[in-house]
Image (cartoon, rainbow over all chains, first blue to last red):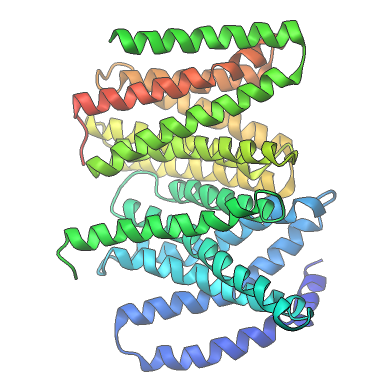
Length: 224
Length: 230
């Protein structure tokens, strides 16, 4: 089964998009000397690359009997949120950096993932003529990138609050993955219903809430 | 104090009337309306508690309880919104998984209480970490593979684990309310899973607003006591 899934992925647009975006970014990461920027771009690159793992796992679980209707509502949210959150565990081992960097890196990871995913769906959007192709693409780029970015940022927040604590670290991250997966699942389900406006506004609400909370913290520290 | 008791009494009366109405009318509409009421109550309570946690910048027990309640509220919101658009979720859904994951945060809060009480032991933490991680990973696998048996057994073990941890805190004066609440939640979960009598399931479901109310009272007592490390 795995060989079939990998073959399916190899004939798709994924490898092409992956290398056309990743290789230039890797050159940039090598050149940049600032550690925080390196981290941020590294997580962004991982986000782009993680689509590969997400594709394989989504296909794997959707091949189970009776699963085809559950892919976007139940399987993809859990798989994608877990895959995006994996590199954040690195922060449990490192401690000499700005705490907010974890949240920024998490968001970079989610946005990287969303960019690759949008590119993957791009071909189906551009099949429509003229400007009609642009509208769904703009909606998707705006809301999906925010949704992926903010859902991973929630997990980043969890890593930030638990990294210095003795208590259950990893299970708490799993709990936050569940919260992110539910937000993701609600977005996927509601986008095709009469409550689509709720799905479209939800990521923006999270973004502005996060923005306000982060600004508050930076102000409290007197700006860094 | 009187106001708190009045709220509890109303919530209890509500549970009894929902159970009776569900049996007299024998229609799903009562439970549907109850689902909407629960979602609204949980959301209001979660919002209120979250507001308190943000205002006090609490990074200890209060934060864990907030995250646990948020899991429950988000799970309820999931089913509420799906109900509005007329989509029937699968038996094992992401919403259910989120509601189960509230235990992780409540276990973290219980451990924080233990830590405050001065009960140490790094081995305990490693053991508890491993057990909760395995159980949650099993739940996640159950959702992905649509396996109800794995899910039920993991939740049951999580309930038992929660009962063990909470019962160890009953002697601690500061943690007693929360420990009792956790014992109640876990025990009700086990009873509803077993379903000895048909009405027990309906009655336990109808107790949800009361439980949320008790969580709100717990936060009030935490604020009043101000005993937690920040």
